[in-house]
Amino acid sequence: MIEGYYRGARDFGVEVLNDVEAIQAAHQEALQQKTEDGKPGHCVLWVNVQKPTQDELDWLQQNFKLHPLVLEDIVQRDQRSKLEEYQDYMFLVLHSPAVEPQSADLEWEELHIIISKHWVVTALDKNSPRLEQAIKKIATSDRLFERGLGSLVYHLCDGIVDAYFPIMDDYGDQMDEVEDLVVDKPDHALLDRMFKLKRNLVQMRRFLSPQRDVFRTLLDRSDDYFDAHARPYFRDIYDHMVRVYDSLDSLRDQVGNATDLYLSVVNNNMNMVMKRLTVITTIFMPITFVTGVFGMNFGHSPQVENDPGWFFWACIVALAIIASVMVITLRRLKFI
Image (cartoon, rainbow, N blue to C red; front, side, top):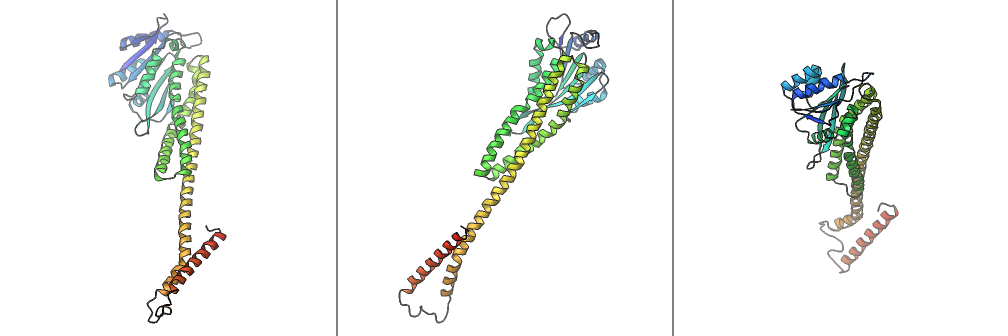
């Protein structure tokens, strides 16, 4: 499906173009609107493609002179974030994150942007509800079209970057909770939670690292495609991406430290259990020895054949005294 949004030189507002003939006519008008320095004029053309057919891809290639590799990338999804520059345009691959409510796993929507001096083409996968909603919101704003292509591309990129912040804030809150639980209540469920959080952070870093370089290059090349006033906005996007990337590194360090702390706490608890068992064994060792000696099945055992009556209770008192001495001794040695 191909849909166009166009604001012409006659200033009739944003027109929605639903057929390729109208888009082609708007494209020709936009190409004719040039300033003295070669920058685009007042005409702004934005073409959005969603799950294009082969005929629509052929039409794009013919009218916008797209390289065959660009068309191949539009069809092939699950790509790495990148920026490729051709003779008259740039091709961007960007990714927008979201958290799946039930499993808390990260989901990624992929957006392809082709930027020229006179038009912008965006390509979406069929399952991109958040990006589709953002595109419709931007496309209905006549104020953004008045500011030129730079404003449109900026808002597209800014929406993608802003999607990272609530996720990073949520992960930060989770890490604060995890660090408290590691000391108070370490268990296997908490360890699974840390591993899942670490897996999501590693996955996010895999998309963030190349995407940061994309916005760095886009900032450097913004003067060649947009008006001068657009550069500060793209610098702001790059600063936000660097901020997200730094927060991601901090969270990864927190997860690693929390994992080490968890293992230390578990090992310490195990040592305390072994210490208690050792103390109990030490206390009962002399008592077991005494009871073992007098429990032997000898043929003639003293104080058994001629029991005076008080010997049993005397043994009980002796055993209690031995246990008390062992407890006092272990406390003085700071074993308990």
